[in-house]
Amino acid sequence: MSTIADVASRAGVSKATASRALSGRGYVSEDTRRRVADAAADLAYVAHSSATSLATGRTQTVGLVMPPVDRWFFAELLAGVQESLLALDYDLSLYGVPEGSQTRERLFESVLPGRRFDGIIAVGIQPSARELERLQRTGLPLVSVGPYSEGSSAVSIDDVDAARIATEHLIDLGHTDIVFMGGATDSGEASFGATRRAEGYRDALAAAGLSSHERVIGAAPSMPGGYTAAAGLLGDRRHRPTAIVGVCDEAAIGAVIAARRLGIAVPTELSVVGIDDHEHADMFALTTIGQSPREQGHEAVRLLTRRMEEPDAPIEHVSAASTLVVRSSTAAPR
Image (cartoon, one colour):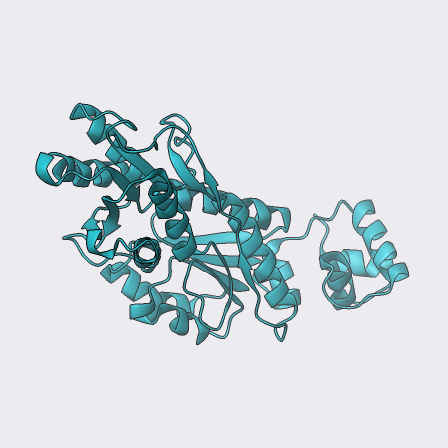
């Protein structure tokens, strides 16, 4: 098996120059780059990641910290990150740990500071635990995905705006009794993103003079969570709302299923709108605020590679597109 030393000898350059020529990092003249590439092809040389790391000082590995990928948004985001990293010949170290858990605390306290990465992508950061600030202390290039991005490059949708648009859609249809489903649950506080979405819901009600109708109920951001919360809410005929804004599509779909099982027609008796444009949203004819987590994953890698190549480059904040997608889960109240 050929080594980088064999390639360097055949091309008549040093091992360091051969490594720079093959990795594309650092200055090498075009003539030298061609000679090294030709020598590598003649010798059927394939760079080993460990050897590349020793020669360049890089690990060719990016750390990805996020909640568990059992939810559609995080699974799609992971797919986007992985696609982009593979195209750049980078490895991925994934840490999918629940928010607020002891495992997550240990990850930030002792595990990540001791790992060697070329950069870190952090998803769903908790401001209350100062997680972003702790990652910044590692000194590694850092990009966050989500609504909290203090001092780092980031990609996210405007969660406040997304929920405001969803609520305004219902208000424009004539609804006044609108519930936001996805606030704090009995198992703990709502995530920062969910809190921002609840804020957007409140802003829309206030602008329409409907603040006295405000109702935020706890619901886990999942289909079972939405189903459980909606079943309890809709089972009370005297206080049943005419519309629900789900914190995410999964919770909203759970509400649609609960309504159907209770014999409540959607949308003639209950309108439901979500946020995300989940892969199942069209199946349930769900009106939603669309976004593309896979594209956000691609964008996060783009931002990170720039931080790795240009550590002093200005911080970038990319606002991912989100649009109202109207289907048949919303209508004017009877």
